[in-house]
Image (tube, rainbow, N blue to C red; front, side, top):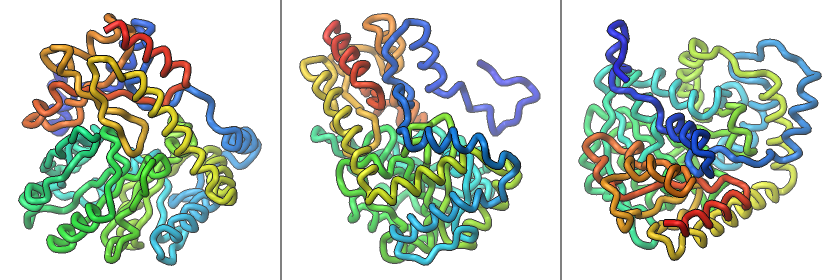
Length: 392
């Protein structure tokens, strides 16, 4: 689809998001949708009870920083992670999902010509956020290993930094790879950010869906001072349609984000913030059993899909977090991942996402024989997809 002549240059390189395209295909072919990462099962009772109760509460504009009940809970939780004393106003900004938080950060800090380092594959909003702020994405591919790990070439990463570098985005657990960054990897990235005096943007939307120990850059020595952490209620409580997220960091950095945020949505849905506050507080008061159960639930779903992929032409790379599996599809002989993903709904009734959507134009060839499946689905849907894989 070509842009209208009146359209701005900043959107000229954008097409329809890959998630909209393949969700539409899932509906057209009545396929099992392992494409877009939204749960197809009911959210936990605690958050739905809070949601219903919030319908009878205050319904007008909340304060710009966010509803005090939610911001206070977030500050208390992140204070334990970072070891810092956090103020619910100065150090927290509630956003319209993690996505708007990322966009607001770019608007707050990126000037035309500034460079932002992105590790590939990346969540597809990152380059768009950088470009719409006038910045320049600089890409560094990670290398997939047969054991499911994705390695960072730190020599290549160092070459990506320069006096033009304003920030680097870390996404752990990672979408789409499921990589959970180790403390050693985080510390090496932090050392580069310190040396070049850059901001670290830590996208932690899947922080509670990690099957190995999760490490936040904000928790490492010298990390908090230059890190803005972005997180998501939607992923934590399986309510992706709520679009409730938050940004946490040093007061001066959060203040800049707030200055941008106020001109994007201004504030965030009041009853959804209230329900999120109640659920988040209850979950943490439960002695972290909720979060352990959440990780176990998704690890079990991961294992169902990994088992379902055995004996098929797909060679799965086992993830350590998030709710995605990337697999090698080269045995199927398709020209590339797009051809495969457009054909799968018709051929076997399963929808997946082509990982080339998560690579820069110069590096799309690296995803030529890869495919991404989402396992945030009912066990029944995962078993049905597993049956359909056998039809290959």
